[in-house]
Length: 252
Image 1 (cartoon, rainbow, N blue to C red):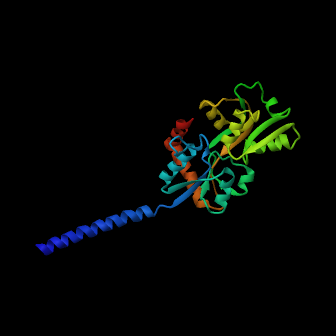
Image 2: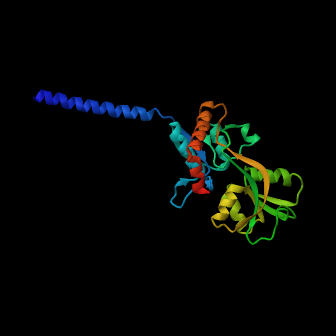
Image 3: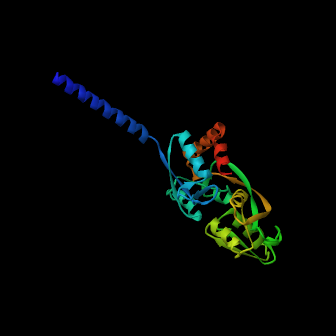
């Protein structure tokens, strides 16, 4: 009886180990991708009051990871470093309210667009400036560096000789705070983020829109067709399931 009991106990232990090993192997089969983001561009990616990384793009990527069967890790860096991080292999993908532009497409491959917006011209809520006077007659305009808003102001106003002073900042909160504190008269940013900032109580208002047709996408290293297809398939699935709309409605 003792031998049988010992044998039975050994078999139970062996089965348990095999099951544990099997489950671990299944988990380890999932690829892990790193998503680089700025974490300073609400409502797309930002750090909340509890110090957690949140936002539309954070939740979308997590939802895609779930339906496509991969693990995702997030890393944060300055906006100007995000695409170089993907180029150098320090991150597998990036995004966060990132517009698809010809200049960026020369450096990375983008997914299908998942959001469309325009640029908005913003002034303080007590300003009497309009969309024209806010960007001419010696006006000071703040922009986040390396954004479509900054590039539009440079190409269409500064380089064409309009009387204004463009001031560049590392991130969107700094550019917005410069406006609120009176260091500049206006700023140009994506309309969705501007509208979200107004609804959150920022003392600013929109005086006009610039119809640029901003289209957001996620960027991967050039030639990474496998990850690009995975992201595109994931986007389709969460749109069909209603998860995409659920995420958008939570933040907007």
